[in-house]
Length: 164
Image 1: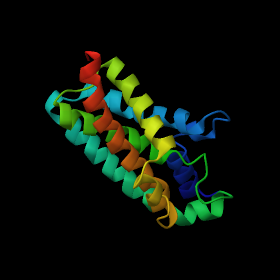
Image 2: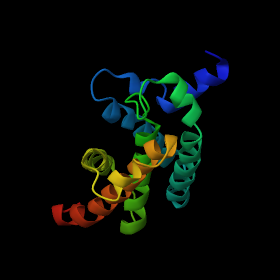
Image 3: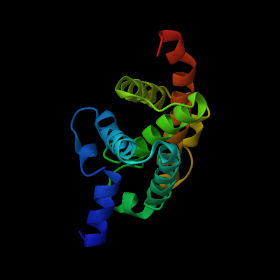
């Protein structure tokens, strides 16, 4: 495997998190949590949400560019080890929640974001399920971004009713 392919492999597997033999999507989402929390801990509060969106957009584009790599590296079209979509979906979740609620998630909010994102990523209500049919890596990436929007919206609607 070339150096470029090794870097692609690290990118799409979130530094190997997607290789987990148990729940690779959930384990892979931890990459998104790490990015979100590190940015939240290090940036001025006024820059966090914008930075989440920018990082999500850059990673989304990079992920969508991996169609040829995925075809030659993995045995199926949407391999479980490809978890960059979960990383980006988590960032979309917390960014959507922050935009709607006008507040940043605390530790419990990040836990709720993980739960909500994984729920919607597995459930895939329309149009998320239809987005999986898009060609190549775009289809791998797009449904999780819709799940992230659903998750962030659900957090905005549900968390205040729980007193958060």
